[in-house]
Image 1 (spheres, helix red, strand yellow):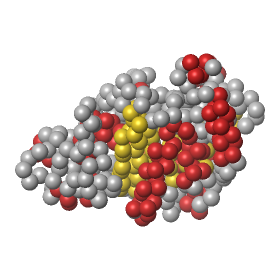
Image 2 (tube, helix red, strand yellow; image 1 turned 90 degrees about the vertical axis):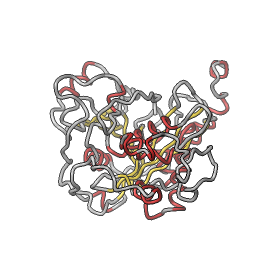
Image 3 (cartoon, one colour; image 1 turned 60 degrees about the vertical axis):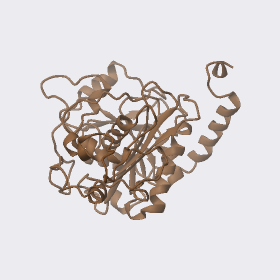
Image 4 (cartoon, rainbow, N blue to C red; image 1 turned 45 degrees about the horizontal axis):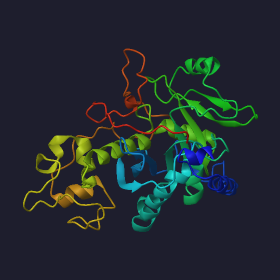
Length: 369
């Protein structure tokens, strides 16, 4: 009754969700299933993906779902797609997957149908896997439904099964001295639910890694570390940048040019004709209503920077932001997005440094995943 009064789902819906979680949980595989997962340098891994759903500021219904695929070990974006969606299921702690996963599943299925050669071999999910109230978070849910290896990457500790962000936990964090250091998250049940990982030398805030599907915890931690140029692994960081750029291009009248997100990230000098919504005669880039056909229709789903550049007849790409590609033997080294002169800011925006070094002010809902 309290849930219904507060706008939450009825008890019958919650019971149905619990049964569905229990049914799908039986299909979770928590061991390595691919040869590349057992290789120290992940030989054979070529594509890693990141997914997330982010809300429009001040709106609890409209959101943006995004999928980004990066090459490995170069960590360069080879595919990106985002779409504005209307969330129908209410947010309930522990049931986030029923609110977000349907839209992420559509993005993955769309890629599988249209560009199977760009399918990621593993997905890094901004949320939890088995580190969850019922051992079945959003990373598990998406992994089982897509049958892809998935890793849960959370920025905050979900306090379940006796796990607490108390003085003892903070002392363990303090003992993480260098990149790659970690400690297990052991619940009162005696189960290791995940690992706290220091992902970068210049960041003292750990990530909380948990198994999603078809990958062991040990391999999940190694892969996450190898994907980190900054504190946040690059697939998740890039999907956040795409979300921020898409929301920046989405106007109050519903007109968007989400295709132009690569130029938004590269800076104003790369915007075609120097303005946000190009209406110049002969220009192929036009403001489109959601779902409306346009000059790039048919290619809009595959938002490859290279393809869009060629379609618009623009010169080569900006100077690459990444270090030169090299297959890492251990976790790759790089500069952190955080200042080395003091303690990192507690604000969530510190995780969202744009390529130009500016802080994004876009807000992102923090939920228990």
